[in-house]
Length: 425
Image (cartoon, rainbow, N blue to C red; front, top):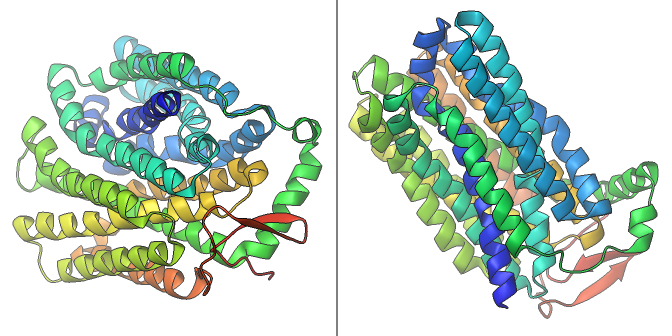
């Protein structure tokens, strides 16, 4: 049990550090724009390029982790992420203007490749560590809380580092990755030997099995994919909007801006922790709690339509953060606990790819929507929240009869966790 707790601590450090490595840049994007002489859309690409490459690489990392082991993918990925941060530091130190911008994008690309093989692999790894689904739910709640805590800490830490040196957040990335690397080496062991048949399984055969799983379970799996993407789009879109607005309209800079950005993220973090503790093994509870969270998000974005006062907006966006924090642990648990271990890595990696699509699209989309006005920006976010709530309501369907926790049945050769209906489509 102690070894499992130590492993969970080490694995939880990965989303915390990967989030810091990305979100720390949000409060200093206007500063980077000024230093490099680039516009709002161009500077938003520093966040977007990280997410775009991760979208492509995450499914590959998931397949490799299923075949060769989670730890063997995580460790090299952390090293690659550290190297990406080092490239950004070198560009900022030795180069100026557009030349530095181009190399920083290349470094962020490399960092995104590393992130693709680190954070997304944590979700199935937690599923492998624990046999009891209740412990899996708690573990995933802790992982999601560390992820969101990284988002809370990142605007404050990024703002303080930016005061010291505009590219100081890039310097922090290699150091943080090294810390996580050492924790994983020392505390994490693969819970069991990989099945020899799985190791020999060719990519074509594996993809065929994934295709079959998606065909049978496509409705609820795709719905969860979309919900994860919507949540991360809103989170990073709102952060980008607040960062730009606080600086340009309210002349709020540095640590003061970081603390304001941290308010909605702090509530998101708290909601994630409470949600992960509360859901347990009850999949109907996961569904309805997630639905409630999306309704809260939609309502908050909808009310924001009628006021651009910064105090009201920060308060309403904080309420929206509570909604997102309620949703994410439920989605993590549903998709992790409802799939067999052999395919868990790849399917959850596809889910992580959708979340990274939200991360990648949020800042540039918001930078363009801001030009269209307040109503268009928050009207679109309200519509996305409603769409997410409807997906949870009609596409995610826990079974009507709750079976014994941990029991499994065989359905056309595929293991199906009890308590969640997986219907052929």
